[in-house]
Image (cartoon, rainbow, N blue to C red; front, side, top):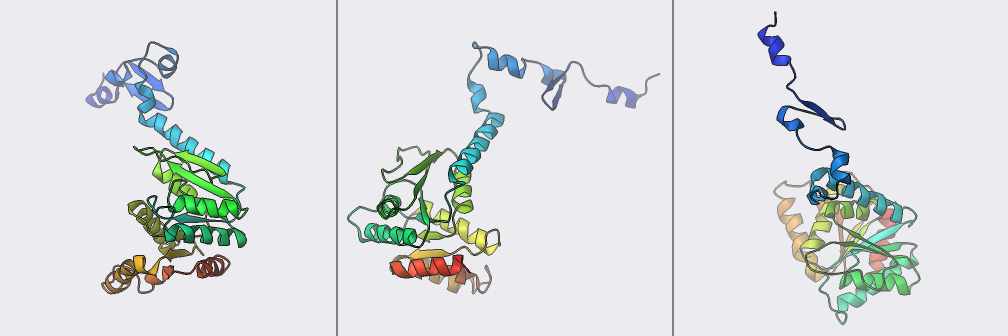
Amino acid sequence: MNSASDQWYSPPAPQRHRGPVVLRGKQARGSTTDQRLLDSRGSGDWVHTDPWRVLRIQAEFVEGFGAMANVGPAISVFGSARTARDHAEYALAEKVAAGLVGAGYAVITGGGPGIMEAANKGAFEAGGTSIGLGIELPFEQGINQWVEIGMNFRYFFARKTCFVKYSHGFVVFPGGFGTLDELFEALTLVQTHKVTRFPIVLVGRAYWAGLVDWIRNTLAVEHKIGAADHELLYITDDSDEVIDIVRRVDQG
């Protein structure tokens, strides 16, 4: 005689396996995975599902790690894509990148125009390795002509991982939201000891002074960060000092 509990644990029919996933009852209806793959009459919407996205994400990490594995020591340079070629910051980014090459570093940027292009140009013309990690955007930006190793990412987080994993530090020129995003991502990772001996150098005292003062005089004073956390940032206008800071912090 079946008890109520026996009836409760009877699996609903039908039952089907989708890889390691067990589907029962109404969830078991429909076609199999290989049927949907091989049936040319089926919808193409499956490429937009989350499991497929996981594979795309995995592929970005595999391609990124593969492309960057043998680059050697590198510094990432960030800044505005809107900086004109005749702007003083463009020329300074070229000079800093050339100095980084002279100090034995490859140069990584977001691969776009503006400060990114200037840094790639400076690295390329100095005989160093010039790398651009681009991102798919609603508006076409493309990889600039001075990039030797380039990759376009679909996902910001995969791109950010490659920036941090293969960089020995960040040099940050004046920029907008994207630049600030990279800056505070790096600050958080250094503050929480996810990365160590990682210099973060802000180039342009006039531009960054307000932010640094706010961090020091508001965040630190109101105990929103540690008392010494503001010291994780370095700020300068001098290209030679950028190189000195990077080498000193990176090499301990």
